[in-house]
Length: 534
Ligand code: ACM
Picture 1 (cartoon, rainbow, N blue to C red):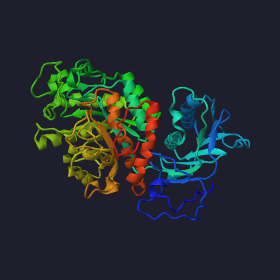
Picture 2: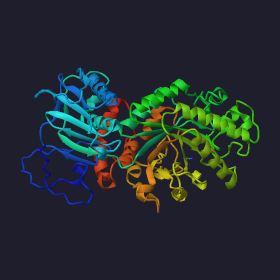
Picture 3: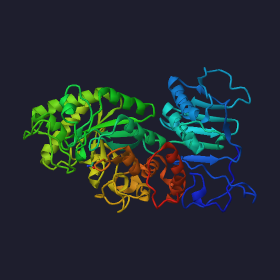
Picture 4: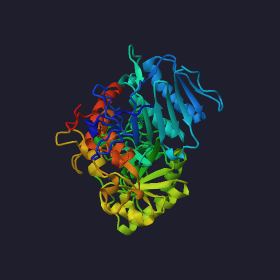
């Protein structure tokens, strides 16, 4: 590998991601005037370390094979995912094989993409990878299969935009530039939330949302599965939740819900992309749909089957002093835990305006016991930090410094500051969709902040990660959702993945501009932010 020579005149923004903003650009060898300028690949999130080679690229051809040199059935599945990604646009066979340990390497001259699990590379962690590309071979190494998966998402971004085509593409060179990348994420939790309660999203739409998350190396998709306007997940022991509680949505549309099979399909689809589904069922507030289905869990009974199609918050609550409430919540959490492969259950807990602090605290502590008894870790919005939390419980900051109370229990925080990463906030005053109670959130707002300095007294070690919520009061389908996600979700993804020292707005906006062609090829709707030179 020839290290790329860096002409002294290059600005930081033009350099590989390892360039530190503000640091002097040094070159080991002054570049001859005629040396070709090698533009660094425009990867998002920027890798932790990248060296761009000056050698010839690797060309994927009809003869290229995908080999898992040291791996297992799961690594082979990742290799298959790479094959699936490449076969349609290239129309090449790209057979993926698991090669037994000790087998000879490919014959010289064989065009091969090698994937390998390396038990001695524990420094790459659960999600990191190393990718070495030169004209002879692509070598992708990881400690765990998730790292291989993130590595193939990097390969995808290194390939021409037409790699996203859903039909075969003629006369295209499928080149991957010579590069060496060693990459691990900054934070373990990199999420996006979709509110399927205010407006219902079909399984296909949720999968489109998961696809976008995977493209940018997110590893959590949090589904907001219940609210005043609808209950969206079948709970076998409580069938009325969906038969009576799912039939409407904001504005009065038909609503909908996921059957157990639908939910299994969503979790399977996410798992294949190394994404954990975190299901949220809201309590004690935001609960009118559940109350309308089972009125005995409300202190004041309401008519069964009535629905709420407005967007006010804070007015509904379960009856927290009633045994019937906890019997139902135990049923719900037990069934949901059994259906959910991931280790988390999110219980909401936000915006309760009708309980005393003592009632609220008692409720949260009781529910925490229920979640734990069913073998899951509880997650809740930052209001839960008023209660005595377990160290395994995770609080999701969204509006204030009150989240810091989690630290006294050793509970970790997910950072979702609404003025930075609430992607349902309008971009500016002219955005037709979205809300603006937390302000306008342009791309730079979503990008240019550091989770470790956002809240006084909350060090990086107390933060498990970052998550971008997308509330859907105004977003009736995935096309509307995409308009709010893109281009801000890639910005949040980089906040979660890339070391702070490697992040730089000017560099990011240059890379982001190059991604629009990819979104167009995939068919993702996006907002043409004036902050980006598209
Ligand atoms: C929230 O935005 N109510 C968590």
